[in-house]
Length: 384
Ligand SMILES: [Zn+2]
Ligand SMILES: [Zn+2]
Image (cartoon, rainbow, N blue to C red; front, side, top):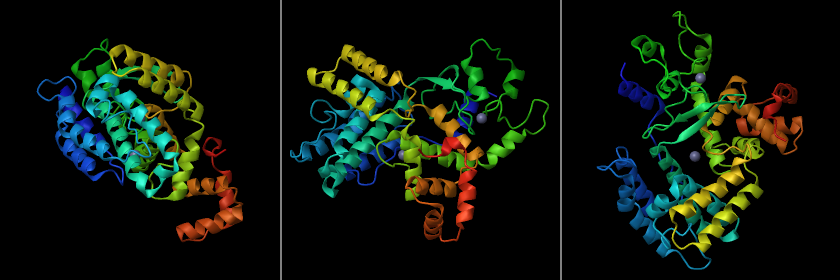
């Protein structure tokens, strides 16, 4: 089996890239992003025929500039200087996707604290900024990145280079472990004989469908049955991590959104860390009119000093988030239990929880059943 053939299968398995457009995002920008999404697949940073930055400049910059110029001057709206000091593409080019994503995220957090921006009038600005933030994040997938891979005990398993155009092709579709195939092609010391090639799967070694003697692997069978739920939990975790300051799971169920919000609170950077980070980035921004590569270095250095010392989860920690989703599914933390835990967090007793559940789910549950279910939940999932 050739490498490109494998890559195709991996992309197919994982689905294509998508750009999330927030409800309420400025209509012209939303349309420009859709047009961009139709065209961006063959583009990359390295390509001469399909330069990614050129595409952003052509399709997105003019619309974003127009939008920023149309904003009222009071209260002041600031989009990390986009449309005023620099265009979106030149900001991305100068400080990188990662830093742009972080700047926009902090920017949104700041603004959404103000009354005006939580009102209907200010909502379009926040929604538009969020959309650009997601876009910057998705664009990172267009760049080869070295990702540290950790196992469930947080021990390092080495560093793998993420491929240029795919999303997360390196992971086992059922957990946060590296796939056998990716581990194989990333390791130059391994022999690339034909026989080896055939034994490798797109799964990790514990989830490969068949054992080397040809028998079915029971772990695979068990995990593949819950793949749909695993994908749902992973996406919820990813959404929540990308906007930690508010319930952002977008599950369509308030209690579940609340559960994820609280569940991840103590696993993410603290408000203090985020403030530190934002302040130093702002300082650098205000001193510098143009961002050169030295400033860029300085900024990244500051950010990793602040974030890097903690074990705090970030959106880039894909492997940990996938492990987390796997555990939720394997330990049967279903949606009903999540609702119970969210209600318990609101200080309701078991009788009140059973009444609330009956109301939201439309079927009766006794308070005894509630206490039995709550007692059976692993400590790691309880909300403090
Ligand atoms: Zn796996
Ligand atoms: Zn999302």
